[in-house]
Image 1 (cartoon, rainbow, N blue to C red):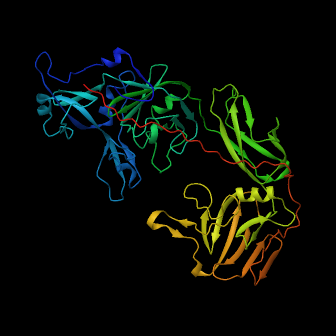
Image 2: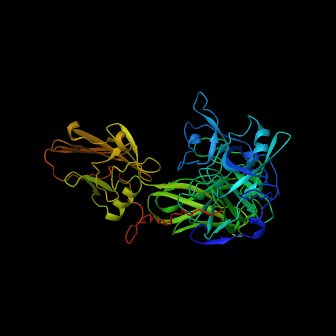
Image 3: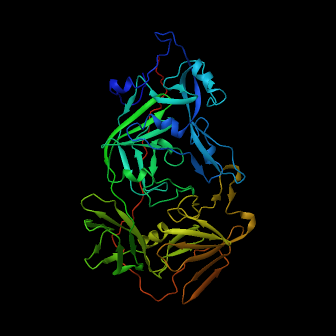
Amino acid sequence: MKNFKTIAVLTASMALAVNAVPFAASAEDTEYLYGTMEIPYAEFYQAELEATPYEIDAVSSATTTKWSKNGEGELFEGSYHSEAAEDGSGQILGVIYPVAVTQADLDALGEENYHFTALEEAPEAYKTVTVTDGKAEFSVIQDDQPETFDTTITLATSSRYGDYQINPAEFPENTAVYGALVKTSDGNVYAMRHEQNIWRQGALSWSCGLTLTEGHGNALDVENYDQISGKTVSEVVYITKSGYLTINTDTYVPVKFENTLEVENGTAGTGSVTLTKTGYPEDYHFAYEIADNFSVGEDDVIAYADAVPGSYTLTVSDADGKYAPFTASFVLSTEDLPVAFDDDQKKLIPAENFTEEESANFIKNISNVNVNGTDYSASGKGAIQIIASDGVLNLEAASGRGDTATPVFNAENGEYTLTVTATGYDTPLTFSFNASAAETTTTTESSTTKTTTKTSTSASTTTSSGSESPKTGDSKGLAIPAAILAAAGLTAIAAKKKK
């Protein structure tokens, strides 16, 4: 038995799938050889898509490495690929999967035997191969113990990898996905492929035609997948080396469409900005969500009060749930500079006449730190935390990983000048410190003034904005939100079925 966290055996009709083959000799004394074959996607999925057949193409990849990662434990384990082109690109052609085939049928294939490689023992699951007039046909997966994994899935309507993405709440650890099927309640089946649709930990994505390239720049196929919009997913079936692993669900796929949703930037504090939206169906019933103290009027004017500087996201959703939600980001900004650099503590502290809350909001919104002319992103993929969440300068910060990591600071290099940019703050903080001496220079530049303070000691230095603009918003009692990460531990699965 497979020892998944929660297991239920699927129906006997599925267990006794078409073309089932015994592990030993049949009544006619026909013996089967067990091995693996490199099966193109079209042939691998043909029997699985009997209800809704369509051609499944190879996956062309513009990346130079990911498409070839098909070894055990790698991103696309179980796939096989073409030779790399001169530019490093290639194609994922299909799946390496166990098969059962007679010696006569294997001989009939001749050299075109799908690179058959014999196995020393019978596999847990396999496809039966039959050959007619030199052409091979592959059955559905022969699995006498298909499993149901008891978990939930979430459906995202935005993704780096397409227009929709399915994520299981849990997934058996170290389980490689060789293929996957998304089944809808109307009886249709949609095949998923590596790098187009199949990702880590059971994540599946696809395009309905709005997103035409995924996060690595690879073109996404739209045909057939666009038919999933507006339907209800009833099953997500993963094909693993040991057979079928099914998650039952009842997940509606809201309809997406071409549209425009924009919000103009504005000034922090109390005010209003304009919302622009076009392309929405007549039966789209608008519901809006931004943050506390924000409201959207019928005239598409967004009013707000006591809004701190930073980036905000407007979510527009259909109150009836038929259509997908959409988002638009905008920035409310100020010329104020609520932080200064304290050389004694090597830390950003509140500037004169500013509060801890206002200083913390600047630090939370830091987007970039320039060190001696080199920019380091403070958010997103590849971010480097040069200034910690409490404002302390991270003198151990480094770019790169492992042996290739390069320290940002080096005491032997002497003076460093840093320019700290934060989203929502028009005036960056610029300061200098000497890594090998006590002299500290702090500089603040705004659109109207420039202030420079130097000291020959390591005493605290403070910086305030040269702008005469008033502070925006009332930060008293303001709670600064913090992201809370949750991780679900999964139980490793290693049991094999015994035939």
